[in-house]
Figure 1: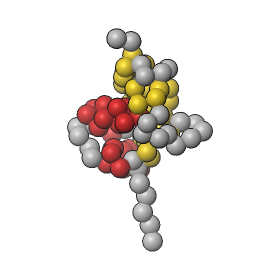
Figure 2: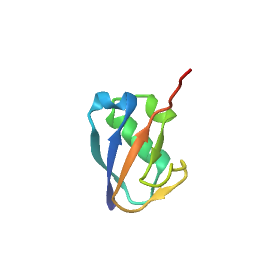
Figure 3: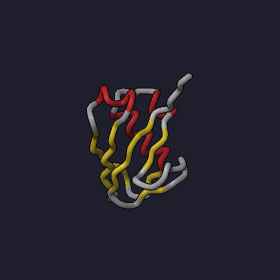
Figure 4: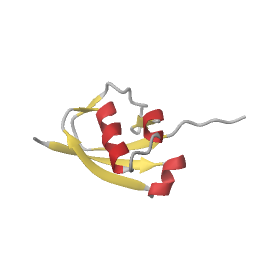
Length: 81
C-alpha cells in the first residue's frame, strides 16, 4: 500500500504537542481518516475531532480525499465573548 506524508502544523490548544508533526497515511485517505490517525498520534486527544483541517487555501470537508504529500493546519474551535 502506498502512502503520502502529511505535515501537520499546530495552533491553539495543539501547541502543547510542538509546532508540527509529520506522519504517513494511505494514498486516498479522507480528512476524517487523517484526523483519526492524528488523534491516535496525539494520545487520543479528543479536541482533534472538534477541529478542522485546512490547506493554504481552504478549510477541508471531512469527505475530502488527499492523494499527494501535503502541508495542513489543524484549527481548534475558538470561543470568545
